[in-house]
Image 1 (cartoon, one colour):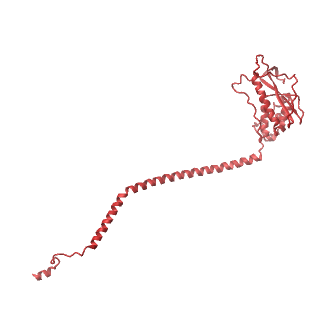
Image 2 (cartoon, rainbow, N blue to C red; image 1 turned 90 degrees about the horizontal axis):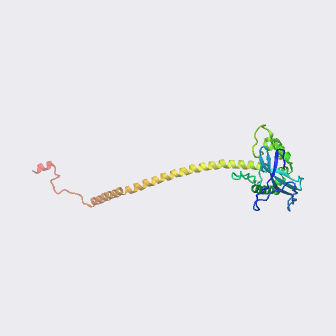
Image 3 (cartoon, rainbow, N blue to C red; image 1 turned 135 degrees about the vertical axis):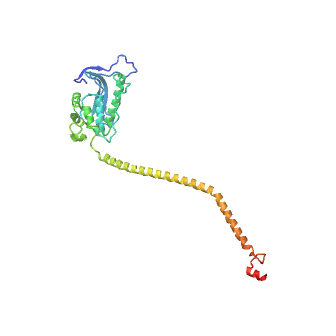
Length: 295
């Protein structure tokens, strides 16, 4: 794609490339092989022919995207940057929150920052983007998305112009203003994701919130019950130690008390068996009057 801002187009042909490296790309002037739709699908897509473009502000790589679809007419090819694929993935995730969108290949790592324009790196990314777009096109739900149709059919110049303004970008990708709060708020910054609340997700969120409150209460009660059980266990252990000490220390006293009781019983039995006591001196209890008379 030769956009208005591009000042030069450089093909990713490496003169020093060996046979083991990624093959060089072809130019858009060459006639590509036709796309053949697989059995059971009414669409076929292909991402190939990466080209590095130079502009006054940046350097980037564009990829040729071809599409053959029985549901709509499409141009022979369009050119898309990695950011366009990233935007497509974002729009598909926002407009289909219940659908797992195929993952997009990562941008590049810190190690690949210097080699991101090398033919091997660009060729590997081209294959990854082709796999991503092929999975999206063959998805039973995502293939019917207006986002995918706009991505495959919008001319390059119109895509660049529309993406400069947020309002036009929403119209381009087929998103209504209801997804972003009905267009109100003026200069409010848009956030990622749809604003429309799905009934299923709302009911699930309410259930999870209620469940969280109940589980929190149950956890608090369990903690209190455990604390009370530990306290009662400590008190019972202390009571057991006191009882053991009391039983071991009170054994001698109990034996002495039993001995005293036995002795008292023996003395009582002896007194009961003995005859009544009588004095041996007959004059011991004679009254003094009787004693004077006898004298």
